[in-house]
Image 1: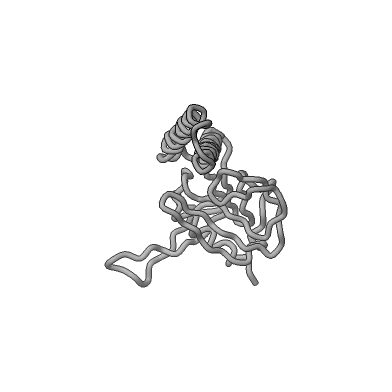
Image 2: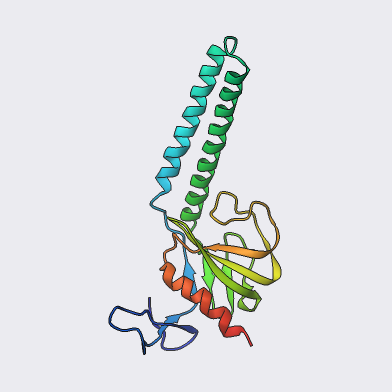
Length: 203
């Protein structure tokens, strides 16, 4: 990450090493940060899983049609549950595939961090001041890392269905989950910035 000699910047704590744990100088990061979504390596898995689930639903449906009259109530219930379950799983993975592909195809920054504001363009209509962030924590899974922001004042959040941490419906929320994985800026740097800047504006 490029260091800044002038203008807006933020000083981030230096990383400790095996040989040095104290007296590590901070790293100066130039602002604003404009991070775009990358094409995630696991995206094809969503497509494979979606095709598998949909083909399984077709198989359940074919079995049900051929054996419906001969089957008992438990058999019929099992076939219907298999069809609906596979359709739901297929729709889930297809939606995740489409959402991730749309994010990666966009030329606009997904996340913009300035000294004064955070703007997650995937779900916020405009920049949100750091002064509105009361508490920061992080949620991680095997492939994703997201910042969980507890706000002092609710903000309007658009639906982020099929996105990790995204809101199911659009509404005012006092908690915002910002996905920081799969961006073209190191997630460790973004994580440190999201921790540091709210502290800088607190009295």
